[in-house]
Image (cartoon, rainbow, N blue to C red; front, side, top):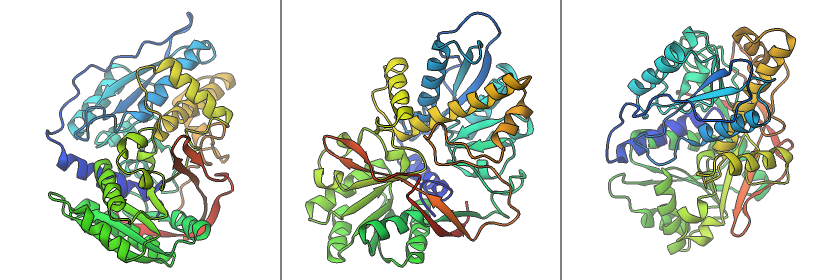
Length: 435
């Protein structure tokens, strides 16, 4: 039930629902054609065309869903600058689906039927309504973000965190139930002695549902759980913060949007209730923390993030340095750095490694690429990802040994890696939940 793998589906769906309700306007169809981004290209063989779908102009607004796209585009630009994929340029064709199911179907039609893409890479769709069509066409979708259950439902779709579900195209997971572990809660209990956790949510169905999931996982790890709920329309964060202070909470988790997180931090700081650990999720693992939490410096420095990929803000690792250099070189208009950008970069690398293995062994075909994706050896993207596997288990595992990437925000230093993600591991129970 960790927020960074399977159970994160519920968090992302919940936050998407919350943010959609709070948006001033509804979703719309894509307002631009699926045009390829210009990249340096060597002459010679025809390019390999891939599609990148992102809900760039979704009701959530801003850059909420553009990180993986930007990371993938930076990777392909750097690859083409080095001569391409064995002498062939990779042409990345982007499409903004506007965050709607109709828009997503439009993007899928454009990319598959009109642009004739070989594969999709780093898909980040608020409503992946076209997933079944992508699967039916046999187009590999590589390294997508599992905002909904599509990557645990359909064949030919390969999410960035892997999957053990049967993926027959019928129901998600195992008979409509997904499973996630409790490693995040185990980590903070072991590493920081946390025993009392607060779960703060809105009185809105999706947010409340995710809060119940968090509560269940925390209790499975022996925590005393303090619930906190604020009114969605007129939230009183200060009242919740006062209760957290009275309850002597060690750990705070939430099912709030980005704005709600910032206001909760401000309220906790105002009443002297900043916990030892305020856990955020991979979507908020960005360089914008200082700005988002500018009014709450103590809470800002209590922020911890967990995930399944190496800290994007840790240049001591050579693969992270390469990512950061390419972003600075090829995505100069994007000042933010984020974990989702790094995962988009890893998704593009994954496609490239698969395609290169096929070109060097004979011919580039979709079947060959999928054999690479489903091989027994896990994929790590040069150490950027925790080992990713795709398997089809008939029954869900009861326990699983799972590792965790952890970072803490420190003013003046940014996100500071906590321990070795390949060794921060535990065997934890796998608990079922509906998608």
